Amino acid sequence: MTTRRDFLRAASAATLLLPWAGNILSSSETQLPKRPIPGTDEFLPIVGYGNSQAFRSGDLELSRQLVDILLDRGGSYIDAGGSSALLLAGIVREKSAHDELFLGTYINSLDEDLMHRKSRQVIETQGGNSPLDLVLSANLEEFGANADKFRRLKDEGLTRYVGVARHRASYHQEMMNLMEAGVVDFVQVNYSILEPEAEERLLPMAQDKGVAILVNRPFVNGEYFPLVKGHELPSWAAEYDIHSWAQFSLKFIVSHPAVTCVLTETSKPAHAVDNLAGGIGRMPDEETRQRMRELIGNLV
Image (spheres, one colour):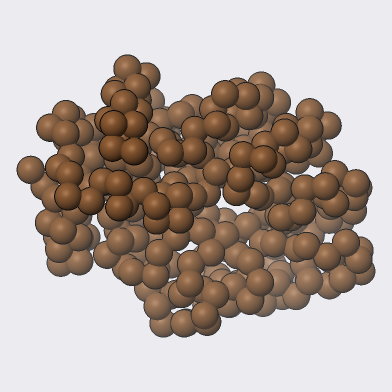
């Protein structure tokens, strides 16, 4: 049986990727499959990056390497918060990757002039040729009270989409309120085998309202790995092209039809390769997803 160590060794040496066979769009056997952004003719690959420490620390060479790995596998989405926004915008320009990369840029100020200046600064750093892909706010209550300011960013051509991002179940109701109000295009939410609450109401509502779902905390900030450490993957995992515990978690997440893209966060290139492979291959059906829940539940 292939272990995570075996996979990472092979990934580092030969960039191992597995064929995909499922019911979502895939451009080739070695590229991440894609799902539509609801209500549009645009698609996003189903695995992307969160705001990696490599981006936050300004490590340009490592950041370039991680971006190259993502692009090589047909990936697109990267979370860009704080100083990461300008670093990643510069990489977009350097690689002429406006059409390939999709950045989620955080703007938390409610000073409308400042919101517009920051948006233009990132656009200019990218090369000044196109609007931001997505502007996100981490303050749900303030977003709801000032949705018109974010809407004007769209109306004035500074961004194509707007949305909110949080990482606790306690925020789910407010997220659903924003979806009900029709003011968000994207919602970024925590969802995994260990944090499944979103599948009860939030994910079905997103499908009903046509809201794209980004998933954070796929490994619950690393709490997942101590649970599975020392345990072998079940033999049936290979039937779903799962070759590491990281891929086990990611396959559970992306097999939910409401999920547009799950965000993984690492500064280690080999781990990035492993994570991205978690979006490729056969997807678990509902019966298998229940098996996955039960297996992890027995380890908790």
